[in-house]
Length: 118
Image (tube, rainbow, N blue to C red; front, side, top):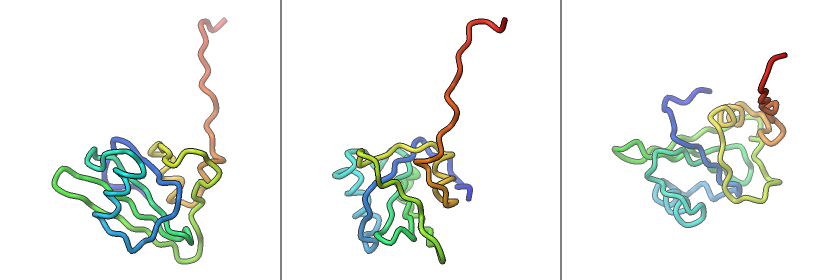
């Protein structure tokens, strides 16, 4: 699932929230619980207790937008065993999460830095 925007950053709220909360409530959570500004153009991800839905909040310079995805027969592999309340994701990790992968298990190979070839 490809997003139609190019986000500056992607932040994931670790703990599930009450999904009756709308744009104003989510923007307040970003400021109060995540200690971030919701007006930066970043994406802010939230899930519900059953982890079958994701809400993504973002500011597009003209107003807030809210995106919702509901799974019909599965659950999102939402990171739980992390100590940080807010996780910073790459765009690849966002795509993996939305596709159903457990992003805590998916780690790239370490970068190698060499000075010479021979």
